Image (cartoon, rainbow, N blue to C red):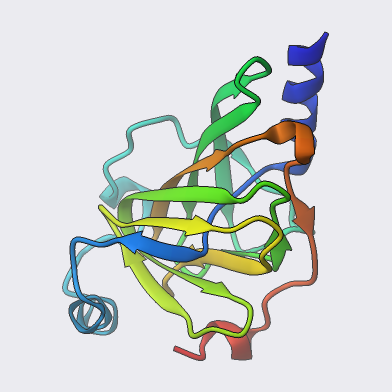
Length: 175
């Protein structure tokens, strides 16, 4: 019963990603150049290297643009959810928090993430980010290049995600 409840909660809430960069295999200036100069040809899902299936489209009430979630692990013993999200170019999550925090591992493409009160950070393949518990944030793809990420949500008994208002175009474009 616990596992069924956890799967249901994960399906309803459609978890996601982002926050404080902990590792990066590139510097920010280099990443900005890649994004603005479009030196990578990652404009559609066919251009990305998919590790997992594309998944189910996330609800419009929680995302601007098209984002797709594929659940990988929903474990009631470890109380952890792991999944993969693909954001089409320009797609992004609403502002949200995770009661126990979240870890993201970018598996392909280029994207953005921002914690409230901080600057937007560019993230790309090989980067890992963490978001502390109850920290308001958002994440998504860059305008020109899609992004895939694995997300890890620990301690799901504390809750999974609290969705808030959409990220405005002005906020998204404030790089």
